[in-house]
Image (cartoon, rainbow, N blue to C red; front, side, top):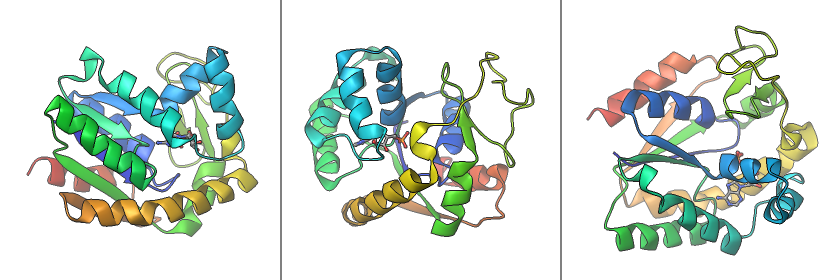
Length: 215
Ligand code: AMP
């Protein structure tokens, strides 16, 4: 099964993605994670990516599309994938369509996590993640059982540089502007909108997703 998940930064996309890939045994392909790994390796490509990401801006389409294409062609994605963080622009959505039809595969479900904007800033400023395995936690709503350390590999959890308040606002503005035409584009395909409220638990949202995916 191939799934695409979309939502504004802080919509719960990352948390739900972890649950989906585990339950449906498919491979997670997050462009944000891909880019952060490259940055950690301190390559020149990583430095270039960091110049965009650390300021809360999007990586240019040409570079993003090239890196996604290289990644998605790896055999580990042949048994199904969850694409997260891509497409972020209409151009990327169009290029993704082309890429997939060349590979003769299709996206089975397109999920959009719809959340009120006011919830986002609170969520993102409390988000911490594991730099080793990329798992994310929320200091209050989804804390690690090991406090400031990752439950999976005991690495010290850190805050993403782009999760600082000013940068969050910039990312939301950019994401909102870009999202509209992408949603319009997918409206004509199999798009499922999942409306989530501030009080919805991770499990409640995951139940809604499972209902859609099990159909
Ligand atoms: P994320 O982990 O999905 O929030 O992505 C972190 C950052 O990586 C974003 O704020 C962008 O700077 C960059 N990024 C991730 N995916 C894309 C994409 N599809 N297009 C452009 N930039 C991206």
